[in-house]
Length: 231
Image (cartoon, rainbow, N blue to C red; front, side):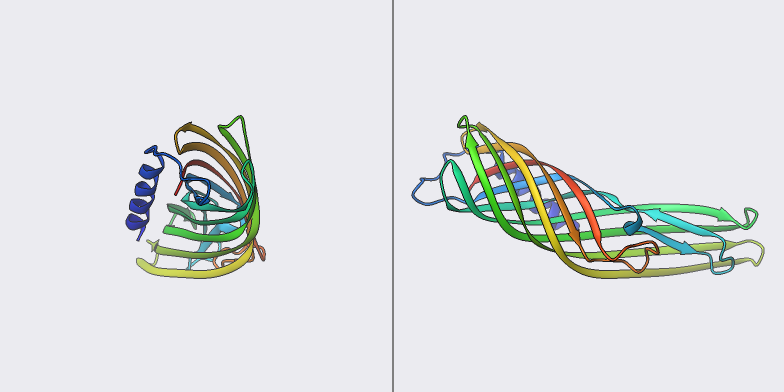
């Protein structure tokens, strides 16, 4: 699944970096952005815990709140030329995996956790964009968002005292709704080829049961480098 998404993103990025002549103004083109960056979510909401079954004082915590993020966004104008108003939408994905090992019980009990988390982030809203000096574009967008998340872990617990080695696995899938807002700017460096940056904030009511300190919502900030063109 991840390999297909990365292949699609690479194909989109290649298209954005291949300059072509822009479309005629009488048929408003869709502005498509390939986005690659990083997301920082609230730490408590994405710190997952596992406690030893033989000694409940031995706990391992995995912080997965920072992760790479990539995807695509589009802006379809309803009105305007230099200043435009229209539809803004995006499909974004984030993922992170981590291995953790902790010892307790006078160094006898060891817990090893192989954990992974992925998030799918979908949003649709409205944007306002302004072009100045013929090459620079700045924009703001906001609207509703939905988020899907899946957390999985494989746990290996070793207890030399009891000569036991217990293995287990756990998964937690969640869905949430909320809102997003983003702003950024693009620079026209060649005909129909733009590079820019974007900052995006998102908050949904998604919450993972495996994160004991999680609140009733998940919020985060994402920063992206964007490569864009009209289609």
